[in-house]
Image 1 (cartoon, rainbow, N blue to C red):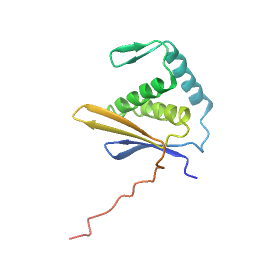
Image 2: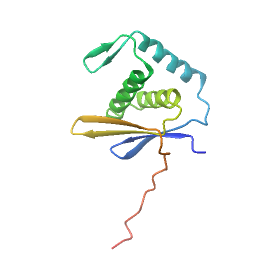
Image 3: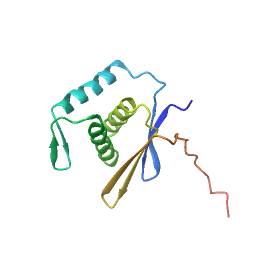
Length: 125
């Protein structure tokens, strides 16, 4: 069974999270700390949500994931990817589109991720 969650930016796979691999204790503790910080409230757009539900938390993490990918902040991107994969165990793909600074994020629960295959066109004339 494919137990991998993938993150795409503009149609290109950026990260994969294999749920079959055990998350190290310190990383699991970091995710718990993230939840504890979110308990104090999160900023969604220009509005502070004082008691975010699971949906608002995952949307917040996905937005931070998108920004981390754009900033090439691998540590934050990996943490946000892990958060989404662990907190949403049925999530298969996160599709992030950035069109002239307008970001859209889509969660895919019903379409398993299949690795992209590079095609070499150098030998074609």
